[in-house]
Amino acid sequence: MTNLEPPPAGSPEEHGTPRKAAFAAWVGSALEYYDFFIYGSAAALIFPHVFFDESDPATATLQSLATFGVAYAARPLGAVVLGHVGDRSGRKKIMLFTLILMGVATFLIGCLPGRDQIGGLAPVLLVFLRVLQGLSAAGEQASAGSMSLEHAPDDRRGYFSSFTLSGTQFGQIVATLVFLPVAALPDEQLYSWGWRVPFWLSAVVTVLGYYIRRSVQETPVFTEAVAGGTVEKAPVAVLLREHWADVLRVMCAAVIATVSTVFTVWALNYATSDEMGLDKTVMLWVSITANTVALAALPLWATLSDRIGRRPVFLIGAVGSPVMMFVYLDAISSGSYTLIFLTGILTFGVVYSAANGIWPALYGEMFSARVRMSGMAIGTQIGFAVAGLAVASAAGIASPDGWLGLQGPTGVGIFTAVLCAVSALAVLTARETHRVPTRELGTRRGAGTREPVR
Image (cartoon, one colour):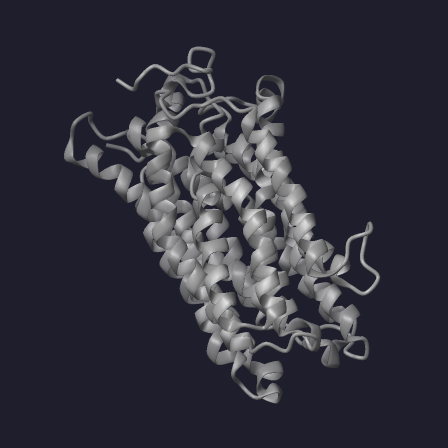
């Protein structure tokens, strides 16, 4: 049996494939997003001192947070290219490529000289490598999500595809844990060599991820398309012709990721700023604890979506997250660590997980297998680009002058709520697809049907 042949129906291999695919998605996403998220912690805590002009701390911080958003700005381009290749050549190839690209870029960031060594070239090189990280991330979740969704039983797609996001959360936990001892170093050691260690560890991460992912089989629906000669030559063109409304819908829905970027990057920077002066280590533990709770919440929300539908579960997260974000930012402003822990866990670990855990199924089910990777990649990455750039926007809003009449943490909360409202409205217009058989997803036969899965 070749790599492009699905296992025989009813065989033990077939029954084990959904779990194997979900595990590969989980491990690969965890390893890849470890790389991606250590940059977020470094951008908030380290890079203003290493790569930017410290004579103006506020500007240095704003510039550093903007480099975090640069990766998101690059992701739409990567989505078009990698989505096209994934729909033409298979999900597995993209899963391997993105892992290698992310690992190399992350390792090289750890090797960069700072501004004191090479002047203005340092932030330029930093931005270039951050762009490579963004190009990699553009194809990661779409390929992993497509792989786990297409291998899953019809009635458990939400559960199995949620492991892509569980992996992402675990990667963030590991990234933050690695930064704990680093952040505790004396400043001289921290800003010279200490911050580089988490980036160098990406070499180990890449090797482990590649070994696990190379053994996963291609999905049944893609192998059938190859065998039947129905693979699209220009999947992006077909996508924009036949699924343009769903692409737009995913783009708008995906901006809910603003909750994640504001929580993990901007709020961390705000809490540890001179204005608030909260302890770096404690705030990193808030992130670790919230993400640990999310590991349990994600599959539970996803399982619920397999029973009652994708839309109601997603809307719990889209409506509840901005409310909880106001509460969390107010807790930071109060300086009470007890309130910060409690509200941080509820905001990010529980409520946001309702939307975060089920979007791979919700978005992936909008498209047929012919264009699923392109649709998921392009739609999500444009929405995620808005979310990534929201960190710099939040920094501008929180500045003394504010933006657009908004100011301080309250302004950041309003800004987040507006983007969550866009996400909620987009999902309200979507079809409910949790009962549509996998092979009928994105087709006229599957559109809007609520027949039970057979």
